[in-house]
Length: 114
Image (cartoon, rainbow, N blue to C red; front, side):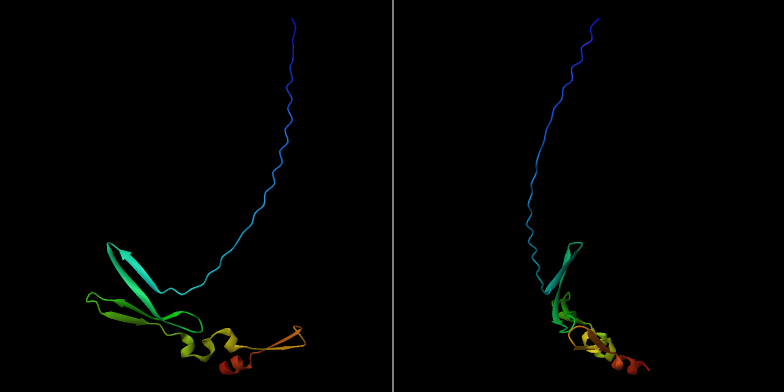
């Protein structure tokens, strides 16, 4: 009885080189109107006035069932409370000797609450 063994060897090498270029496009804008659809009905709300500090919508308008416009307003808290505004108004930065000494003056904030 003769036994024969065949061994099949194979060698394969593949080289893959890839290159990727990514371009990021960043666009900003303000939403002019929002249209909502519910059970076949649609209503369009227009943003009328924006806040210059925070760019939030202050007044919106929408039509009612008679075609007239009704308005909705939002009043920011910093219009009534002095320390509720943006951070750049509440803290005073003073740069001296380059960027080594950064002094933050919180006197305005602390004296208002004491």
